[in-house]
Image 1 (cartoon, rainbow, N blue to C red):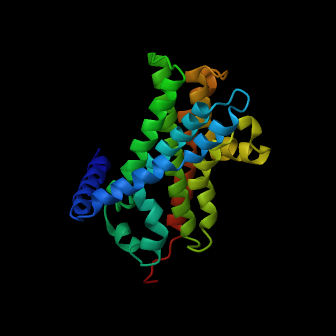
Image 2 (tube, one colour):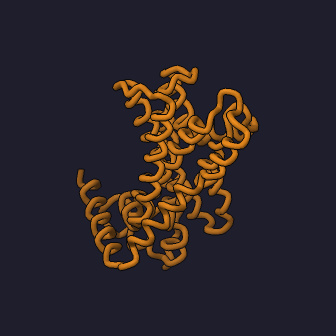
Image 3 (cartoon, rainbow, N blue to C red):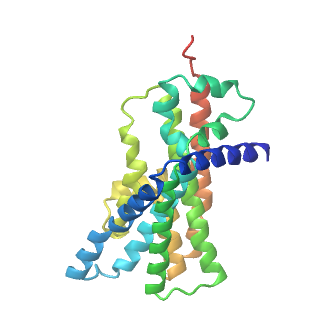
Length: 262
């Protein structure tokens, strides 16, 4: 509880400091416009050529929106890890973090908070609601829980990506662009129907980073596309396992960290 209290205090300070910047409403609007217009190509494509078998635009938008919303949540509340390699390792600020009597994960996670990132969560949530309504979604307790635990699993998975990136940065702050495969590229790949997705991508985003596990399977079970609830309920455990693996990478990096003064 003390760690949570420290985290919330830091987030509150960063939030209030962000409000001092007079241009923050424009930044919020700008990010929201980007999120809303990002899948517009899907609508044009499906309006011209129609559905791909059983795959309608509503199905693909739902999977895409769940991935975007999960990514937005992780990006909003754990933004510090996204900045860590360049803002703390290169500058030596991580030395001061290690002097604090609190968890380094807590302090790094709460070191940055950008209010305009909430727009991604809001935009993704709106797309989720729209696609569920268009598909005649039955809002039973089981179905709602299935969607929510899918989002929770996605939050854990994307948070794990940010933490894993930071753990690798202890050994190199260069050549980290490949990690974008598991952030921005991972929710872009959900635009492709899973049956038509290349096998290597399907395996990568199922068995290593569980992006399809936390987005496709919950959506399929809740909307009756054919997948069972058993697979859908793997979303949260899969996300947690990936998060735990990432924390192990982080701790391994911390143990081998050499201070800028050494």
